[in-house]
Image (cartoon, rainbow, N blue to C red; front, side, top):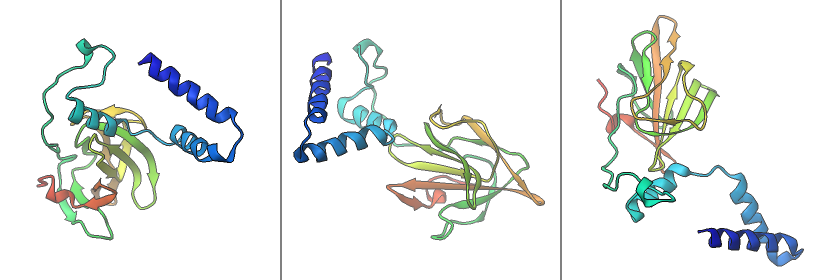
Length: 187
């Protein structure tokens, strides 16, 4: 492994030391690769699928070698669907108890925490298969970007709006939003 690392390092140094138009595309690719967000969850899923285990320097620390079953989603908050999924909304709106706790629907890495127009305080979690779950209209957020969260971990609470508490939830798979009610059995 160290030999491969050294070869890559020396090859990169050689590309950057040669001022040539022929090396410009390679320089651009290297620069882009080093500045874009790396999809750790996706690589881990790929590695587990094709190498049958978790990446580790020593095999003794590679963890469980059992195959992963199809992703089972957890309901993020108790409530009833007030507004169903449609192409404009891209998710569902739930009526929830006041200050209800919101949990992660599946294990993953927090990609975004902050304010989004139309959704208020929002958390986006990326899961191993590349799917994202979006949690909107939150009162507070108990996670930060780049945190790894387990399925069922509390990530925030629902915000009270006027006389009721509403919560927005969406699932994005392959860069397309899908109907969460088709994947998760809401009340």
